[in-house]
Length: 298
Image (tube, rainbow, N blue to C red; front, top):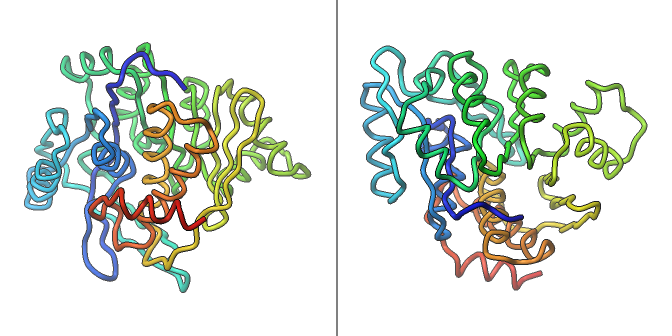
């Protein structure tokens, strides 16, 4: 995977995850941006928060984390996003997402267009396109020359087939989980296919150069250039799975941008996701030594 340059733009939701243990900063694009920054990548996050205390706290957190927040606007009408997170007996998360919130009103600005034009990689998720205003902004940014990576997040009731497929057809790379892959298969009446056949079909259907499918605690599979690469995942004592997929994605991008081969990149991504699953919240303090320890445990 080659970028035009090393600058990365992430756009979409920034929010507070309200977990049983308390509130934690979250939102898939923000999580990915934070992990990329901690790994050493050059990344900017574009979003909006409300003119309220939760918004100011979120901005303070991001600024203290060292992530570029110049493209995070303040919305005077809509509140900062907050999500209620439920954990099942295996600490897997489901989400209740408020609507509308500040990141539903992402508007195109000269600064955002300039950053998109200068970026080598553009990362976005399907959830941020639930509102027509933010969707129009994202679609405009997809016209730039950066490599385009969609992080599929099918969150009911914001999982409209027409919207998600329109975004996919403008993307180069897709990351999704195994349950989401089954949803796409059902949309197209493909019920009697094994996972790898579905991944190959998915890549061909949406003209994607790379597809990555995560399998929860069973690892992940990467499809690129007609070849499959798999990793079984790492066993850790999971605290919660919030943000583990985002950390996985950041690890994969960082490893590929550093020139690692596909198997090594997949292993690093899996270890990064496992590390986050072993800590509370989506963005624990990053510890490369701990990730290396997980890698060496395989």
